[in-house]
Image (cartoon, rainbow, N blue to C red; front, side):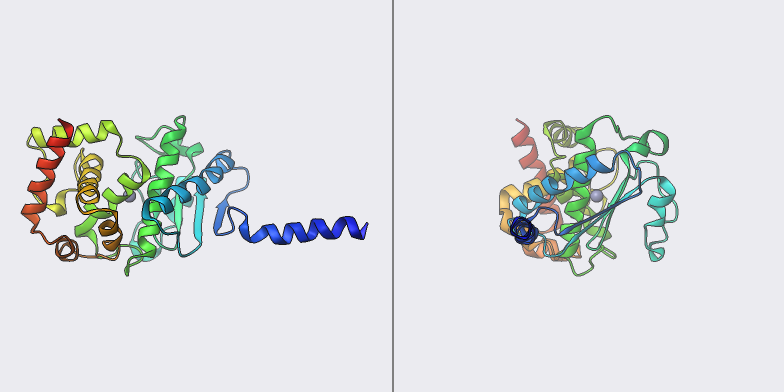
Amino acid sequence: MRRAILPAVLAALCAAPAMAGDDIRFTAAPGDPAAASVEAMVPAAKARIEGFFGQPFGEPLHVTLASDRAAFNAAFPAAWGMSQTECWMVGVGVADFLVLLSPADWAKEACEHDAADPVEAREILTHELVHMYHGQHNPTRDFTGADDIGWFVEGLAVLASGQLDAKRQAEAAQAIRDGAAPKSLATAWSGPHRYAVAGSLVQYVDETYGRATVVALLPAVTQADVLGKLGVTEPELLDRWKAWALKRAG
Ligand SMILES: [Zn+2]
């Protein structure tokens, strides 16, 4: 028996460090019907993000599935002053934690999200994990004081998560044609086209300056940090992005 058990124990010990999920700490309330499906999405989302940035996460991923809105709100640090959250808000991700409102609760306590669409839940989880990766490479860790570059923080999450699909790319071009493009970077993450516009802006930076520049922008906190790294003024960036997006859309 010993001879039979020992190799099994050794195999388990040797396999442990390489097992997927070693660096993923997933927590969910017992009995949450969405827990297994969401947990299963994390390794692929992590791999996608590490592929995008070309470097692994440097720290463990703490992912919590909140079973209802009250548990979701309770997960926010008191300092954020967010004891209440809007119905469209179903996820938050910063360097040290990610909390997702369970898709099993979306029909009851969320709006604008379809729990029956598995792609949507996967993209939202991936979006928040991009914020986690970004936070782990940003001195603020939770983007406090980085509101002005919300366009970059959110646009990066939209782009790297795969949310900037053909429909959203066309939406960005249409917003420019309609004169609905943002007049400033600080307002680019606002309004009905914010996902399309912010995602397209970061896609412009990515395709024009290269992925290494996007990676070099991860520690940026202010508009000056971003513009200085790109070597452009704010009007230049906006004008060049608009021309690029219209040409790309054809
Ligand atoms: Zn976001």
